[in-house]
Image 1 (tube, helix red, strand yellow):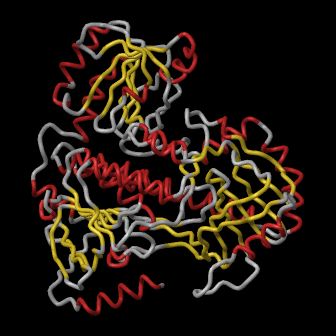
Image 2 (image 1 turned 120 degrees about the vertical axis):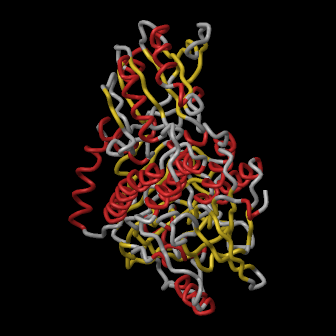
Image 3 (image 1 turned 135 degrees about the horizontal axis):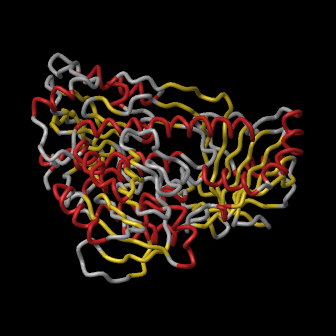
Amino acid sequence: MTFNQAKVIIVGAGPTGMTAAIELARQGIPVRLIENTAEPETTSRAVGVQARTLELFEQRGMVDAMIARGNRGLAGSIYDGGKRVFRLEFNHIDSKYNYMLFISQAETEAILRDALTKQGVIIEREAELHALSQSDRGDAVTAVLKHKDGSLESATYDYLIDAEGAHSIARTTLGLPFKGKTLVESYALGDLYIQGNLPETDFHIFSSKYGFMGLFPMGNGRFRIIASNPVSKPSKNTAPSLEELQQIYNQRSDIPLRFHDMGWSSWFRINSRMIETLRAGRIFLGGDSAHIHSPAGAQGMNTGIQDMINLAWKLALVIKGEATHELLNSYGDERVPVIRNVLTKTEGLTSAIGSGNPIFRSVFDHIAPWIVSTEFVQEISTERMSQLSLNYRESPLSVGDGRPGEIHAGDRIPDLLLVQLSKPGEETHELQTNLFRVLSPDSFTLLYANITSPEKTHKQVQSLLSPWKHLVQGYQVSGFRENERQFRRLFGTDPAILLVRPDSYVAFTGLEHSVPALANYLEQWFPTQPQSADRENEHARTYGLLERPFEGVDTDSHLRSSATDRRA
């Protein structure tokens, strides 16, 4: 593929941008992926990969490599005044990945680059988005790129995905407010090795009158330390020393440890910001371009990756002419509430564990151990942190025509052992499998459970759903005696159908008689008659298009303002 054949240009080759490129390329969409840095990052910024991200990576063939390189965190130990107050245990997570995987972002990006290579996508480095515009008809995006030698290149694409990061040129050019705040506290961080008895099965959070400190186990004695209120005054020309980090630790913990062999360190401040609109015409924003927040709870990178897994399958279907353009609006409908929830929770967690108020800390010491010791709170807390509890129930894509089991349309579908009886219309046979192996990241999956008349149901499905046979694969499934209760909880006991999206969230729930309603659902979003170009352009013009052409733009001036924005 040459660059001028690309349908989508993706700005930024961090985890968010690479995920977008992998997802689109796997579905046959030509992409161009640009990155302004000359070399891959080597420092470990994000360090935690959550269970939900691991589930999604399993279906995309990347999870084994991640687990092999990472360290499984089985719990979180919370301390106050140097003594442990409570322990949050991840074995309550309803997933085979009932832990938090600690792995440096550099390692995560290396795994994603390997996946890119398999898809035939290269990262075009030292190429920077300089300016952009959308056509008056709203049917294309023009991007001006600045290359290493200073030359400018203008090219037109069907869509642009902005994953550039916190200093996004696209977001600034579109005038999208990055609402939120910058916390006044300064933080120190470093990657180093420890000598002492601090379990690598846990991450360790220390709350004290001196401020917050966290240690996160990267494996083989290596930890990431993050601490508020450093001893020295941060400056651009310095970085935290090993001696200062040791001093901070000794100040806030009674567990004897010696730090050594620090790999790198840095100062930073926490920003908590987001945009309310993830789409402007044919431009989409995700990852740090759309939301940045506290590292508390290890949510940021996971949220950005899941932004793109949500967007890419929708965008691929629209580009192929197999879905309505209205489908793309659901990206923001679904992800903005998730992002807002993440910001609220991480801000609250940062405030709580960093509080120096003696009254608050006294109440925390006495009440928290009792509350967190309950199984209910353990389950709720770990499900939220792992991002398994996030759902799209309020999305226009989530429709229930009867709910056979406990699962709602819009919920993440969990994995479980089951019997795949057959594909509809094939000779019946039993095959032991896992639900995740049945699901496809490239198409919808229709699951039939408790069907009393498979032949009759199959004929109805074949009659009503045949226009979407390229889009939907179906399986008749049942549970094992060992997990019958779990199967019934999910699918109920009555004849049921569940349509599962390519990102493994339930799109439609219904009973045996719901096949006509399912056909109506599919016709709404994936019509058998393609949209006309006029309808597409009319729709595009209603979504905040940037209609400013390049003619008359002072590109040198724009470059200066862009550089200023990056330094801010």
